[in-house]
Amino acid sequence: MRESIGATWILQLVIIFMLIFVAFLALSVNYTKAYKIKNEVVTIIEKYEGVSSKKEGSIEIINNYLRYYNYQTMGSCEEGYYGVNNLNSTNIDPAGRNQKYYYCVKRNNTSSDTYNDRANYEIITFFQFNLPFVGDLFTFRVNGTTIDINFPNDDIPEILS
Image (cartoon, rainbow, N blue to C red; front, side, top):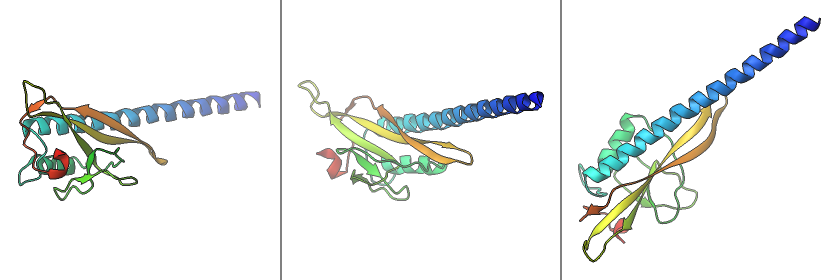
C-alpha cells in the first residue's frame, strides 16, 4: 500500500513539472514571435521613413506582413497612440478606451535647431500567454522605438499633430 501511494505522488510531481515546462515553452515561443513582429514593424517604418496610408505605404506593408504571419493578437493602447484594428484596410485611428488594436504607433517630435523636421516612432505589439486546453491567460505588450527620421513621410493628418 505504501509503495502505491509513493508511486502516485511521484507521478503527480512528474505531471506538474511537465505542465510547468510546457507553459514555459509556450511563453517563450509567443514572446519570440511578438519580438520578431515588433522588429519587422520598426524596420518597415524606418525603411519607408514614416507612417503612410497611401498605396504601397508603410501601413499597407505592415498589414500585409501581419496577415502573412497570421498575427491575431490584439491589445489596448494608451492615449496619444494610433492603432490599427483592421488589417484589411489602411486606416489608423486614435487609440480609445476599451478598443483593441493589432499594433499601435506614436510619433515623437525630436526636432532641434540643427534638424527642423525630425521624429521617431514608438511601436507597441502584443503577445498572449496561452496554454493548450486552458486558452489565453494574459496579454503582454512589446514596445519598440525607431531611429530618428529626418523629414518623415507621414500623410496621416491625425498623427502629425
